[in-house]
Length: 202
Image (tube, rainbow, N blue to C red; front, top):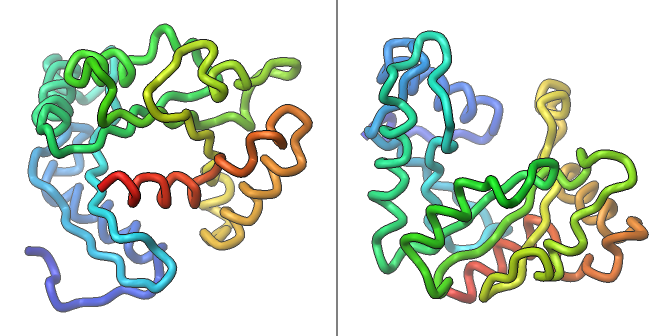
């Protein structure tokens, strides 16, 4: 295990360590590795969960990647989500057509009844002007067994400006509460609600 006794108190340092360890494992290429990086977070403000952050599904190999990377990533994802005790977070961006979501497609294949699939909609704040994700979040466009949860994550600009998670979560709550489209759903939107909902289904 990498640095088993070292504790970090700065998430920026954690991010850098993950990046460095990934580079050490993949040789600074744009490849993926099946070797996991284990990270334990100790805080009175988090729910008791084990999360597995998998590579995002992709459709094409970019410069520097193996021609097999598309299938390699899908195989890796399937190896985890096929396990019957695994809760699946099917994450899809709100600014793309849900009908093309590979996450939903694969989740439906391995969990056809939807007993352990939770739909998460990201980038709600980046949708084109005049559009919204209400039909999805209300389960009208694509209904799942559990209600969809919308989240607003930090942008790369926020990360570059060192916007911390407390400020990001506060801004996320304010976004849903103040939005004319989403205020009626605000009580079940956001990362905090998602964490609590998942902890209840463990």
